[in-house]
Length: 571
Image (cartoon, rainbow, N blue to C red; front, side, top):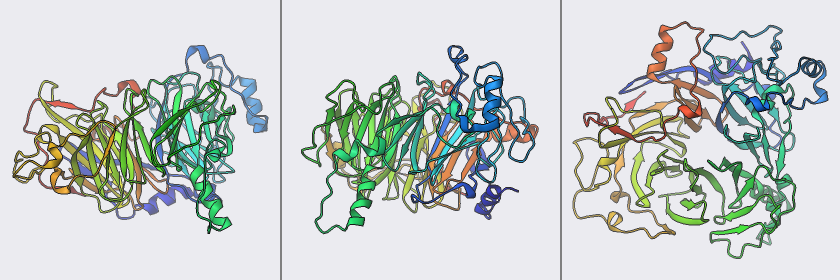
């Protein structure tokens, strides 16, 4: 048993490997982690974040292009050049770290066969890297790991080491032209764009053919003022580094290579991938650190092309609506802010009940936004009403990740009814995974009495001021009285990990959770876990491509008989 496999098993000594929902049982299919021997903590620790990459087949126009192979690859690089690596006509297959080839298990597998990392942390080139596949990208300490989602191997198939800083955030978009589809943000403020396919092909542990932006935090450090005359030198250096660090990164949907990077100094920088990342860039000084302001670069050759100053504090998370027209951010000051990205305007904002907001996510139809943070609540915001419309109580600690499940559909739904039901999930530092159902016809009339013991629950009496008030466009609203907001209870509460959780992602076949320490669990949906049990143990379920995703998470339910149970299912 490998050291990483033993580490995973030790993480889950008494946790259940399944949890039940009204539609069936979600079953733990397999776990993934990283070899502990690979990690170096010389730059401190960073919370592990998770990205799912749906890698498409190599376009025919790029099939003849041979990616660069560093000369330090030795025998493997020479063999790759001899056999024509990356020419689209031949897939290279090298033996794994134990000296034997790893066979592909099952003909339906999408991810392609892969050599696992050896105990020393070296990476092997991935066989069939010209084919499509689904990969998990996650960070831990100073290393970025890539695992095959459809492989039962616990070890990652690729590890990329950063010598000067820790990777802290990343994003992938298969629709980006030019091949550079993966973004990586570092604690130092540096940003890289790379081709995922080229990283999988290369046997080394360094980035290959990367574009570098904001080198050594050069953009941020021109606009930083450290206050406090009594600060010691060591404190100044620490605070300076924290201000420079990337906190979140995202591609702009339909943005043709445009991406944004959030920083701990309260700024969001807008980049164009095709522009030179080393070009000199100057922005005017920020006059009022407390006010939202957008500044565009003075030179057309500059990159980044714009700076969004949100407020004086860390941007903890950001998320785009599916069409790329709106941007949501949450920060240390506890405010959700929603912007019209094309017009550089604030649409609305609202505050948490306590502390910072840590995460946010859009529904795929753009009507609702989820937030979670240090008040232990999951809040649902309406973009049409510009206010909070529901509040979820169920976590016992900070909520660190939220997401809508756009693949889920209510039982007996045929798309002809009027009742819209949303399924979403949340994870927190209480190690719990919570699933929620939200029937919006029960939310829009807050004074109407719900079914006995049902959820949400409503207050009776005179209309609440929160529901009568009109939120002014472009304004930030204080948090309403907790008594005036409908409460919802989780459908399922399941202790998924031993360590605190940092994020969850829904796929067509599963729910994927990751802990702060970088341990991943894949929970198969009922229909897939049942089919897996009846099929061969070697069969691997294929993962849907991005185009297979539903265009909206709202489900038209023709039958109102499906109601959220009054009791929470604990597992």
